[in-house]
Amino acid sequence: MSVDPSTWSIILGPPGTGKTTTILNLIEMEMEQGTSPDRIGYFAFTKKASKEGRERTMERFGLDEKELPNFRTLHSLCYKMLGLSRQGVMNGSRYREFNDIMGMRLTGDSKIEEGSISMLSKDDRLRFIEGLSRLRNVELREQWHQHYDEDIDWHALDRFSKGLIQFKRARGLLDFTDMLSSCVEKELSPKLEVMFVDEAQDLSPLQWQLVSVLAQNSERVYIAGDDDQAIFRWAGADVDHLVSISQGNARVLDQSYRIPSSVHEIADRVIRRVKTRTNKTWKPRREKGQVISEASFEHVDLLSGEWLILSRSNYLLNEIDAHCRSLGVYFERKENPSISEKKIDAVKYWEQLRKGYTLYPEQAVSAVSYIKNSKKKILEDTPQNEKLTLAEVLQKASIGEPLIWHDMFDAISPAERSYILSMLRRGEKITKTPRVKLSTIHSAKGGEADNVLLLTDIPHRTWKEYEKRPDDDTRVFYVGLTRAKQNLHIVQPMTNKYFPL
Image (cartoon, rainbow, N blue to C red; front, side, top):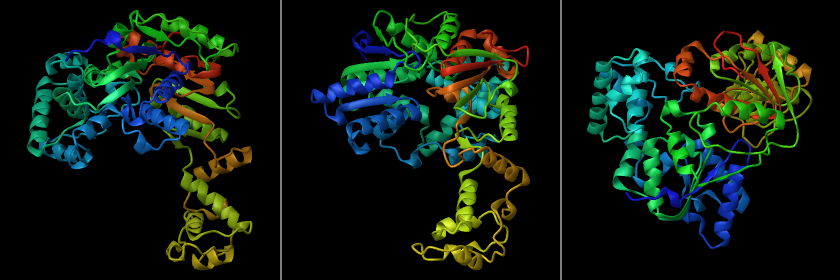
C-alpha cells in the first residue's frame, strides 16, 4: 500500500484543549462545503471515544445515527465491512468451549483496568501475549521474550496459539484482531471524502496499517491525539508512530480550557521526563487553582463538591471505598453507584406511597422488592395503566403495617440500610449522578472534575514494569494530574513504591 502520511493533517490536543470540539468544527466546515454526512468517517479504537464523537455530532447537527454510518470503532467498521454476524465471532461461550478442549480457564474478558498484564490469570496471559504479538506484528516468540518475567512457559504459549488457530479455523470464527488483519489484507475500506481518526496515540501497529488502508479511499485525512496521553503502550499501542508522523507536520491546540496554572506547572514538569515525545507549548486557564499535598486521604473533605479520586490500581481504592461509606458519601466506582439504582428506586417509591402518592404496578413492584415474603406476583399481574394506592399495594402484596422504609426493607443488609440512612441524613442527592467518582487512571482518561484526589502509590505487581519502562507510567500519572479543573490533591505515598512528583 502506498500512503504518504505527510499529506495527513495531524492535530495534537493536550489535556482540555478541545480536541473533539476542533474535530466537530472541521466536520461542520466539511458539511458547509457540501460533504454528505455518510461520506465522513470518524474512527476511534475505543467505544467511549467513538460514542462521544457520534453523539456530539448528532446533537450539534441534528442528525440521527443512520445518517452517520461511518462513525464507528475500528473493530465495528471491520465487522461491518466483512459482513460478519455474531455467530462468526469469538465470544465468551466460544472461549468456554475452547477452554474445555484445551483444559484451560479463560475468562474471555480483555479489559484490564489497572493497565498491567499481571492483573490477568496465567491462562488469560497466554491469550493476551498471543493477541499482542498479532497487534504489534511481531513473532510470537519475540513477544514471549518480552514477558519472560511473567512466568509464562513457551511451550504452553505455543500450544495455546496453535490450538486457538485450529479452533477458529475449524468453526470459521474470527476474533477482534483477526477482523483488523483481514481488512488490512483485503484492503477493505468505505469510500470517503474525509476521514478523522481520534485518540490516535492508542493505535497499535496493526491498527495503523488499517488507518493507512482507509486513507487510500479518503480524499482528506485528519489524525487527532496526544502522544503525552498514550497510556496503553503495554497493550500494544504504538505511540512512536504518532510521534514520528507529527514531526514538523502537526497543529498543536495550545489553549487548555480545563487546566489551571498551578496544575499545568506540575504536569508540564512531569511530562518533560518522557524521552520520546513531541514537544508542545500550551497554555493553562487564567485561574491559578491549587495543588495540595495531603498526608492521608482521610484528611480530605469529601462531604461536598465534585470529586474524581484516582489510583494506579483498582485495589488501592478499596480503603477509600470503605472511607466514603463510613462518611455517608454517595459515590461511583467502575461506572456503578455505591448503592444500586434498584435499591434507591425502592426507597423512593415506598416513601412516595407512604406520603399518599399512587404508583403504577411496575413502580409498586419496585417499592416492595426488598420486603421479604411480599407477594409481588399479584402486583405484576395488575393492568399496567392502573395506579395503586398504599392500601391497595399493602393488600395485594400481603404486607402489614406500612413502616418507614428502613424498618420495612428486611431484604437489605443492615450495613446497606445504615449507609443509605447516613447518606439521606447528610442530604446526599442519591437520585442523581454521584458527585464523587473512584477510578483507576486508565479508566478515567477523558474525564475531569473540579477536585481531583490522586494516589501516587504504584502496586507491587506493576513496580517492575515502572522500573523497566518509566516513560509509560510517567504518561499515566500525567493523565491523572491533568483531570483537575480547579484543585489537585496529591496524597503522600503509603509505601516505598510510588511515582515521584
